Length: 236
Image (tube, rainbow, N blue to C red; front, side, top):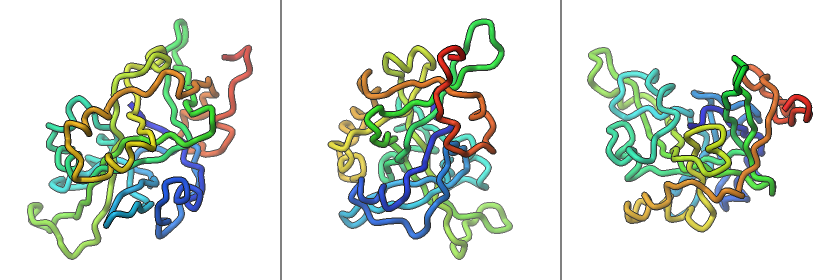
């Protein structure tokens, strides 16, 4: 799964990296992005890529309230085409979610506390998650009718798959990462879904570095760059 990640790159840099229009407003840099936080996503519209900020935790259009989003931060690639919460977004509303890296926790024999890892590309390039997005509006008092006059809330989720070799050492899932060569195919509604499904696979074993870090990351209130500092060798 992917439950926390780093989003510290400024939007103008991200826009240049993706060849996209900049978002309407800038988010605060965070080294500890958590579910329900606003995150940057890249979407395609009228043949152009656009950077936007969406709430992390997908809320299906048919949901009665936003609470369901906190349980929809990830979508399993094996079932995403069939699950009612994700099926339409998978077909029509795919996006890219950039990050400077992400976190995962591993069990350690003899310890109650899991060991957190910062996982990133050693070349400094962003990791790019395969994402889905959705647009939701609240209901009227009857609980059934959508309030069309309300401003829509846009949300997103990250797809996950089986781990590659290094990730399998610490967890049984990992986010789907997409290479630049397939971004346009992923973003286009016209792409054959069989081909889209073929992209939902683990990345090469040598793409990522896994760095043990302090348990400070466990507290979502901690947001600073110190979170990704490697542990000294005698503490790893």
